[in-house]
Length: 285
Image 1 (tube, rainbow, N blue to C red):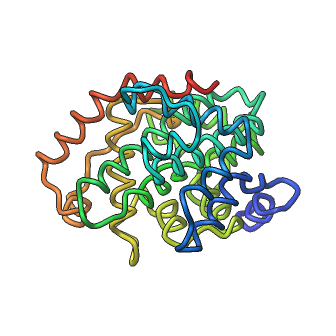
Image 2: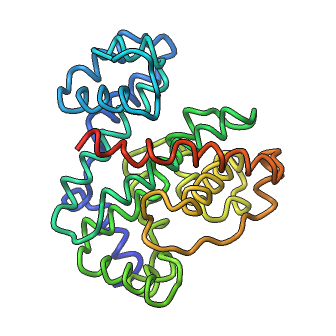
Image 3: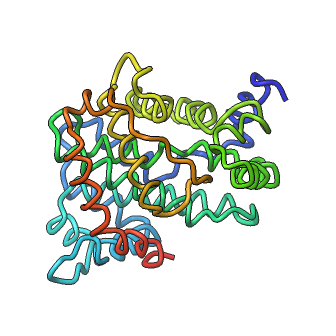
């Protein structure tokens, strides 16, 4: 299938998953600088399924709160506006795509653990540096592999074959995707984000999360997602489709103003949180 035809198929209204409702509402809400915690709480609470999952994650070991979170306003008070927003978006997208991808034969939970972990580590990199906003880094990390979910949803058997090829040939999933589809999850993810009309910086983080040095704008965000993805794969949290983990490019460290010792600190952080991150999905499924 030609790339142009694949793009039309992926961006087709009939085959393309619509933007999850909670994500759409929150993105609209955030365009207004006067948005309040109460408004966010009302949106999250309006979807009982998402609200219950947000509360489950808020009460998970990852956040380690000393008291039980009993409501969305309570979660916002204890965790903050940004954390609850991020959890709501993450659980909304996860629920949406797991429903769409049923019967694919691919371990979607493992893929989502990888994506959610990358989001959390991207956010942590944002907190430890002054070059990228933590909440934007979270979104970039969360959606960096969204193209894999699109390909899985549309091409169940072929994507399973790509994963098998990556395992058998010890190659990257991107290489296997290109061999089978003529495109990679990066292309598919970029097309989806464009269809969803997400902010350009998020589209850039999807397009360049493997090669942030190729990005002329938002290189700090793409570098943060690249590094987070590297650490999560190195620590084998979830499964992104392959076990291929190249070494970190020094250009990424330069952009983020980090040293090798800073990476060691991030790895230690991830190791201390690994079990609680892996258990997050069991808390909501």
